[in-house]
Image (cartoon, rainbow over the protein chains, first blue to last red):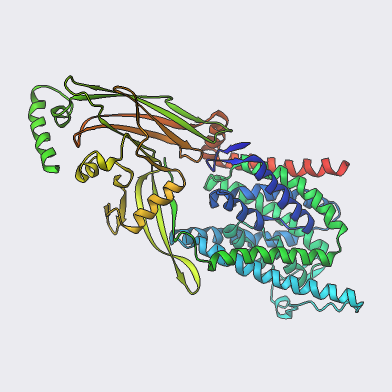
Length: 308
Length: 264
């Protein structure tokens, strides 16, 4: 059974889109990440134009993050001032990211930049997570004492001026690295169509030393806010949000996320992190492979100006 | 050929002064006449649309003394769009877009249906002038400040045609036009599911002894269905409202999802 997407202007198999939402939702529920880094490449691979894919993933991410954000809010695990500071940087980052995206597409290198960024980002984070989780597993196997050596203590980052106290996150740090972190997430979101949760959560834990649950909670609230903003922004400036596509994805995604969250709770956290590391790494490798493999066709046709 | 045509046109201008008539060039050798009928004036894309097949019927009336059916070429052109064709090359071990050509105002859909291979119908010059056959359709490239078409062997032009053909946006069938009775012909055009929206122009040309003896132009529209059209117009004309509605809807889905699954 196919369904015609009115904005993407092409028919797609409804069940394959639904299954994609289900699968990515399962993964995001299991690991507590948004899943944009999986969904956007999947949609582009299906043949949906990249601009429509990036824009339509935003409402999907807003939906899947919202239920998580609500439960974290109820439990008081969200630091709203911290989220606000990150959001301030994120807003500026999004604007810069959109400008960067426009410039890259004008010189025809947006595809290359997206692939290189994905490779570096996913590869780097994947390797870091892999090493950390393997070390944690070995430690628990040998029964050794948990020797938490947090990387990136960076006392100079904390000692920068404009310090501020975030009560729920239990930190007292300079606002410069916080806003800067938000800025990087904003740029990545605009150019790569990712929510940035899989970067933000480790950064909050290891860099700013925010407790793990508060990091995840704050990150999910931030994802809802940025994705709602991105939906409205994409819709009003480019008109590339496909409502039909987004809602099919969303329904699959929210269902998958619930099952994923339950499965995730039965797994041990260090094994869970190992699985996520392998997943992130394999997506990165897949993108890298496309970059170095000789293409079957050396020519590519892109539409510069659509038929009116 | 071009000069000959110009001469005809000049003669025509003088003739026009006396009697208002269609182009003199056509009238001079018009011993055939052609009428075209399209199975549906509008292809409507509803939610279950995967493509459509249009049937084109034509009647070729001929003057007495001519007994053979003429050669027929039907060209369907979709709305124009601009394209960039990129060539990749290895750069520092990575495959990078290095070279490009811009095709300006090229048809977004192009289907050529003929009663026999166009190369057998007429000389190359006539075929090129009349844009008969897929590779002889005019494809303007931007070359610096100028616009020009290039030789058919140009790698960018060839790649553009090949990729458009593999996506089924461009089609050519040298046996697509069949005579079902003397003077009555039929052809089918496949509109793919991803076909661009807009007005499609159908040109029918009859050829006899290597010359175009008659032609006619028709057309049809490819449009979205009611629901799809409403969503698209909303997205286009009221982007902010549309975005807010989608955002609220997505929060609602997330909310309902968490409630439904909590009760279980």
